[in-house]
Image 1 (spheres, rainbow, N blue to C red):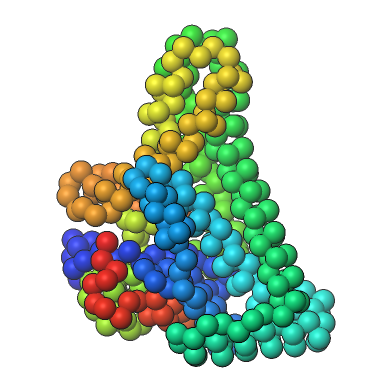
Image 2: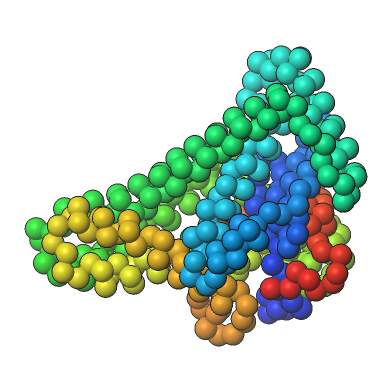
Length: 341
């Protein structure tokens, strides 16, 4: 299969995923599936109906509004899925008591039983389950807040503060804004490259590659087999890594305009933070446009993000591909083409 053929799928699906700890999460038009390779080699499968915010509040699905909403929603679901996958790989196996393990296995068995009863309402949860879910919701919320805070600090506040020291030598506000964008991009690249060197992250990035290859195989209309998936490229143009890179690029352009006339570093920082929802909104719509089209312009726009995936994806083994196939198979709609983007 030629490079050109690899990048020309028969159609584009709205199904997407995320690599986890020894697993993959896939989201389709109606369902979300988490598949984890357990320490004993078996697969743990968790499938739930997809609950979108725009279903309850249609206006949250409007263009330029849906971007920030979907971004936060994806973070919440991603953190929850990561925490779920981590439960199967506790840092200290001995620290987990036999009773705690038994309770967890019992809860998982109940979840599996519910999943078998397709179309039936879930039974009422007891008080301990409710308290556990409330605690989990609190932990997920805190993790999302801390994650967003760390990202804003590292990729927006720090570059602005660093650039602020250059005001004594550089008078051009436009030049300062462009330099700030370059500093932000360098920090982002260093972060991507350094995390790719971590041993634990290397396995996550292999699952990331399996996720991309599985989706590519499906988009090419081929049967989802390990042999077919392995032939696919691991660089996908609609990857979240590409989305983050485009955020950085859009931020450079917007900040170059907003930076003109601002002499105070702290005031400029406040403007940067206030503009974040606008940047995410524009980037989301741009990403959708690029994802729906395949021409010379869109290939140029996606090239940097594909290049970054040299660090955020790696070649998976067959067991990882099996996880990707199972996760995607669980969320595919019954009606063919219902997931077309």
